[in-house]
Length: 149
Image (cartoon, rainbow, N blue to C red; front, side, top):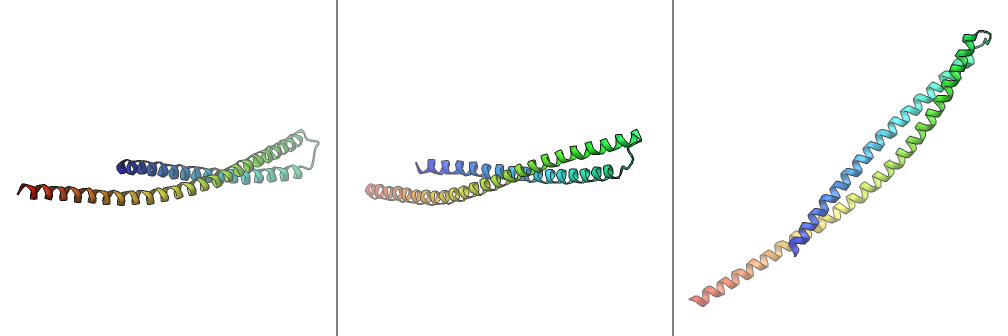
C-alpha cells in the first residue's frame, strides 16, 4: 500500500514538472509576442509620423502627382495608426498571458515542492517499514532456528 502511495506521488511529481515546463514555455512565448508587438507598434508609430510629416510638407496641390503623393501619405499614416493600435492590443493580451503564465508557474512550483516533500516522507516511511519487516523476519527466523536446536 505504501509502495502504491509512493508510485502515485512520483507520478504526480512528473505531472507537476510538466505543468512547470508548460507554464515556462507559455511565458517565453508571451514574452516574445509582447516584444514583437511592442516593436511593431513602435515601427508603425514611426511610419505614421513620417507619413504625416511628408503629407504636411507637400505644399502644392495643382500637380496631380502631389495630390496622389499626399493621399498616399495620408493612407500610410492611417494604416500605420491601425497597425499601431492593433499591436498595442496584442502587447496588452501578451502581458496578460505573461501574468497568467507566471501565476501558473508559481502554483505548479508550489505544488511540486509539496509533492517532493510528501515523496520524501513516503520514502522515509517505506524505509522504516522495510526495516521493521526485515527485523520481524529475522526475529522469526531466529526463533525457528532456536526451536530446531
